[in-house]
Image (cartoon, rainbow over all chains, first blue to last red; front, side):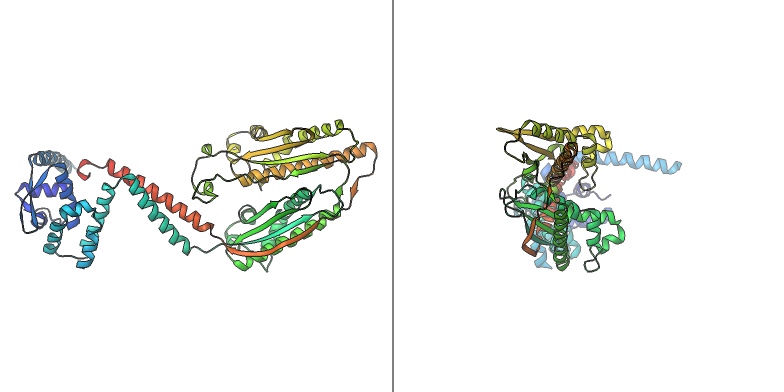
Length: 95
Length: 418
């Protein structure tokens, strides 16, 4: 999975984080290292859609939290992915 | 690396920088900067700009970028040189300026013939189109030389005195361009002497009052005149370019009756507009008219179409004069076709006169009148700049099309990428 939007939302679903913390978390759970440009591109789009919002900042490091709309959209996307994964696994078994 | 990172961050939209720059810089400080980070930032900044710009701004920037890229490219393309010479054809003093235009057209036909051009191309001193001749048949090379690189244009026509015209040749080699024009001039002089030996008619004859005009280019401000050759405008959007000429039957004596001469004009017109005559003009390899139509319709229909594109009109107050015009998409071809038609008129007139003289058992009224052909301006050579316009225009159009495609793509992308 390499969609930065999904990766950022998945990371924030586990708790509020600033950019660098998100980058490390994503690398740890997905094995993908997002570049700073890609990460902030995704953050910009998600904030514009109201799926994440900024919360308290430490120094210049701005923390973000996932909104309820963001959780709903993430859940919806994961259900779709789940369906794809389930179908693919079943087909692999019969192949 | 830090300086470069700061520079790339400046490429993001100003409003975005105001909101996110500080935290992105903090992230880069934590994660470290490198070439991959720079490339990632650059990619995102372009993406961000493309999504936030209005179509007008996008089109202007990409169009300008295309123009600049094309300008740089054109600087590396081998230059084309145009060698040009001016000539004048004058009839001998005291004789009627009756056939200068016809004379010029006849000379042009001889000079642009396959035999003549093939001799120039293969002249060992010139050895033109050496690389093209390795891959293309000689016929195609001759066609390229005739249609693209040689230009013969009537410069002015001071009534009843002389006719000035220019001969130019475009070629990547400056010296060869000049020598080729010299060779073309020599061919003109030979053709002039040859035609003089054949003589001209002094009896009733058809005179070209106004030679076929070169139709004007579409006047679009700030664009080169031949933009229609570059911009891919569909044929149905292009208006026909009309070349016009005026001819007049000149009686041998003022007391001669007009009736027989108007009949003669009608006979000549019928001859010129006949199936055989138009068919040979349509299929003339120098003109190659109605190529698209000829693929989908029988020749008869194409001839009928050409008859509609040819207009013959009367000149008020002069029953012996008439105008002829021909409309075609390509202005150069419109003029060349009308030249061919005018030449047909003159030839048909000579033929009719022959027949009438033979019927009356009169001796032919051929007199020797040497046309004087002089070189006004010897061949000069200039670097052609049209390449820059052409390539630049292609770059500009490519940039504008890229802007339209980019905008469309960003509109069509999924909401998560918006």
